[in-house]
Image (cartoon, rainbow, N blue to C red):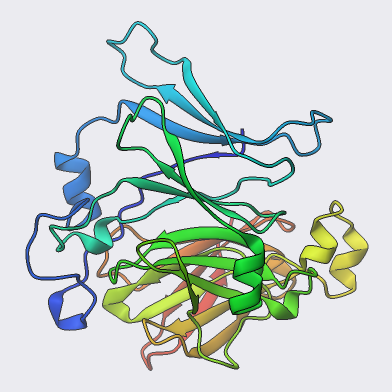
Amino acid sequence: MAGAAAVDVPAAPPASNGGACCHATKGPGYATPLEAMEKGPREKLIYVTCVYNGTGINKPDYLATVDLDPNSPTYSQVIHRLPVIHIGDELHHSGWNSCSSCHGDPSAKRRFLILPSLLSGRVYVVDTATDPRAPSLHKVVQAEDIAEKTGLGFPHTSHCLASGDIMISCLGDKEGNASGNGFLLLDSEFNVKGRWEKPGHSPLFGYDFWYQPRHKTMISSTWGAPAAFRTGFNLQHVQDGLYGRHLHVYDWPGGELKQTLDLGETGLLPLEVRFLHDPSKDTGYVGCALTSNMVRFFKTADGSWSHEAVQH
């Protein structure tokens, strides 16, 4: 199983930031993570992406539905499997079409699960609302359409935006060159809209990202070049400069690269990025895979960003 669909709850930004969809408070999610913890119902289902890459099984990946209701006769069981259309996609980090970023928009509905396919470049859109216990395939955004309109490939992390758009980090161009990476935008109908970052402001490498509207900042991490990792990890490729050790600090929502943090030898292959749950805090953490370190990033007194390795 590659990973579960999590209902991430970035706080709804204040209306003065221009980040909320509108001023009402009847949209999806909650105003803050604390409110979600205190008022949110216990989840009864979870959706898990399951991949066959590397197993020798020549079948499409699938989305598993798992029953989490302890009062259900099928508790803790896989109750449904939704195979995608093609073989060799490698479904990756899923996300919702709308989330707490649209908490102020009563028209926004958390209905569709977005499934980027790392190796094929496709993006699957799954309807989880019509029958939550048996989701169905709604749309496929083809890799050729993405590449033609944006030059992007190898989609990874998907996040919903307050605008109603969907933003997906992409790790390279269709040939696997890291120099072609950036951020894909889909509109609310899942059409390719373009790239999020300003021209000339693409990161060195791509992987995960997280935005914090109250501090007008987005931070992205750096895995490596698809041409290197798609054939399996090779330590020599790190020495060859095909993997990253940086965090990129962007203006949010403007898309301008403001700063690059070099994590050094203690921060090789920084992967998942998370701000603290308190949306007023200007700090977060990233896990660095090769060096097994946690790195804390934070805003300094002059408004720039810095980092430090967390001591074990």
